[in-house]
Length: 561
Image (tube, rainbow, N blue to C red):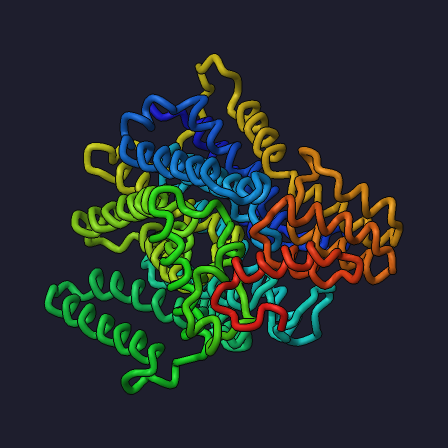
């Protein structure tokens, strides 16, 4: 029997933790206000859910969701295999590259989050998933509207000149708003929805779409169009009781989608959709594929794409478009990133989890024609996330919803089976747990503490580094480079320190840190470039630096340009 007290705590954790992950940023005390802070919150939230599942529902969830557990374990093992086999620094494998933070710890948190969804059994719990997403959506809409009308009150470093939302990037906020609009539409068309909600949701959706257009990010428009098409399918299927009409709708929607894809590739009547970024993504995807093919069983290491991009890019990518000076530390395709990070084992494990969610969606559709707003919202949001992840970077504030919905859809399919119908009814008064591991609140609290401790090092390190930069004190900067658990070393930080000391004419200290940088990560191109540029580097060191720059960027005709 489902322990309703445990589920109540799990659902509340989702309602609070997921939107907080999306919304949480820090400004004045860090150099990266977005990624490390979001990882920190996600760590506490994800582990709280996982501890609740393992502490109270481990046997039942393992019995009911064997494949999801198995593929999650395979994903974890493939990630560990990637870390152990990688030549990249351990701290980079664990916590990810600066400005991304999508290393092993991030995916451990996401795995725990997806598994935590398997503990949900009633409609109110699944509704809280969508409610949490909509709370995050409304806050972002209000913030973006303020920025458009009055200007930004946050001290972003904004090279884009467009709205950033609470993601720090116009692409991410536009995609998230597209997902958000899809969930609003799902409830607007629900016959049980009040007119007050419909009018309010419609107004918010219009404002959100205006913000997507204002962001000048095409992926938000693509995601919105896809969300409309998915919700439209369920509306047509439910309210027009003719299979032929539903089939015709699918044909028309698929045709429109196909034309849009060809348009993005500069073909067909919608070729105006094309942007140069599409060609750039082709180069980035090809480089990621090369990394995976060259390291089929281990990959290159978690979040180590940036160290390998120059070596893996094509001749055209290195010399024509985007050219030798344009680099990236992500393939702009989550699936391709997994292939690059962990080879076939990691890629197949991830695809297996996506396949389980896809099968769950199909099963629910086949056995239930009635319009179910919760299921429609979850399905539309999940498909929109998957589509976005194929053309963009894995950002923790977005990724958290992808993994929540993947596990959530698998759990929803199971609990809506005819033989399980009684367990998904409206929740009754919470029952006391009879488990010997303690109360759900205590277990969730312990899990949260564990998760926060695991996820805090990159945030703590960035806060210490930010404080050192503000101090303008050499000793404080040097202390901020000393490695420890709460201060893991980072290639970018070491390179920045060299430049700081060189600009301050403290060349001996700059040279010392430059040597530390190339020792810490011999595959970090900028470490060798900075060592080469130092006036007090020896001739032998400059020769070694040039040799390594050519090793890391073999197709660049002039690595010193």
